[in-house]
Length: 183
Image 1 (tube, rainbow, N blue to C red):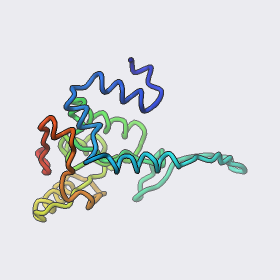
Image 2: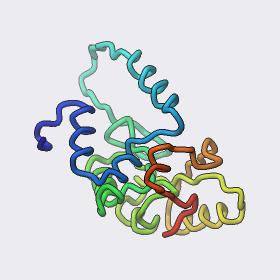
Image 3: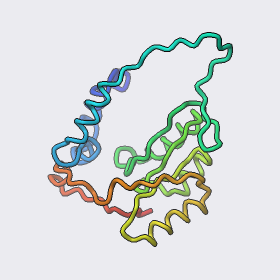
């Protein structure tokens, strides 16, 4: 299967399964425990229906939006994702370049594979920094200050991951990730 034959999410997933080492594919594709959260999310998204809304009486149409005093060309952004460089050694940089190209907000994860300084240099004020709440408050504060000193103006605080999930496919491969930034 070639990139040009990707027409839906399953096509992309099948291509990734063929191209990536099994351990990496299982990390990216895996879920915690029996996958109940993933199933619930999938079912919720299946219920969303987009309704056509015709703009009338508007001479200049635009999807630009302003978030945190910055005007973006699109009304959505790129969510934080950890360890993207497992899939491609330049994944974080590619994401940063795409955000810049499309003037889109992009959030870099505490668990990003690339330093927050390098990603900020690529995105400037388009970049936001996502920080996990740590048991060690000082480490979290130090990282938040480092992000601020780098130039990040937006901090996204994540409080829903107090511990890494139990992911059976990762356990099968003895795949372990530190819950600490290592960059």
